[in-house]
Image (cartoon, rainbow, N blue to C red; front, side, top):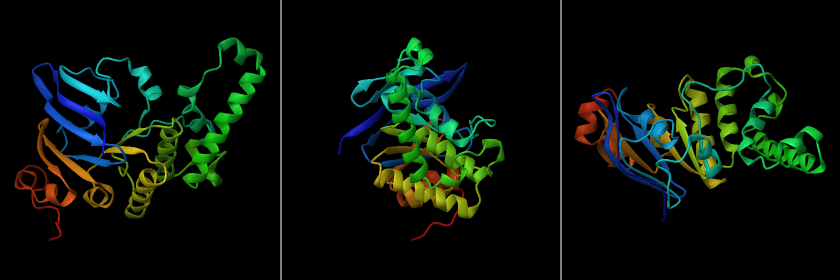
Length: 259
């Protein structure tokens, strides 16, 4: 298997605090790789480094064999990296369809004047974008909500819509920041099925930050555990959950681990 993404000794400091401390890991193409750890462990900070929201103090980020450590954040989606957020970031007064169409912005190749005049090239591009969005709507079974305002949708559906918007960018690498946050048990189970289908049916590589150990165990090929910005363990979900350092620093006996 080929590594689609690599983090090489990445660190970031905020004042005198090392939020991420010399972390290295590689994610293979077609893998679901989960990052776990207590609050403040550096999980979302790593996502912000990959998304280029933060700059690394040290280390390198490699995506598809290209060094992306210092590229501008606005180029990330165009390279094939998409992200969801723990706190839903959707336009509440726009419809589901309109929110998903925003995900097609990184694929826009039509010039400003062509859009103003609505030339044939613009019309063709709009049709292509709409077709891609409809594919995502069908994939996530969101047809009944197509024209509904986000503000009128249940929270669980909004989480799926945000996932859909990320898929509309046609990513090679999908970053999921706590996809089960705020979901009930049934919704979390459904989210797990979507994540598995994204890997199996769409061939998209996933890096997931998650606290729900049942979801992590359900979907993950490998898991990395962090604490205080450092790697504690890396391996299969069972290996990591039963690792003594992880049990001591994170799980603390609050979670039942199957033999």
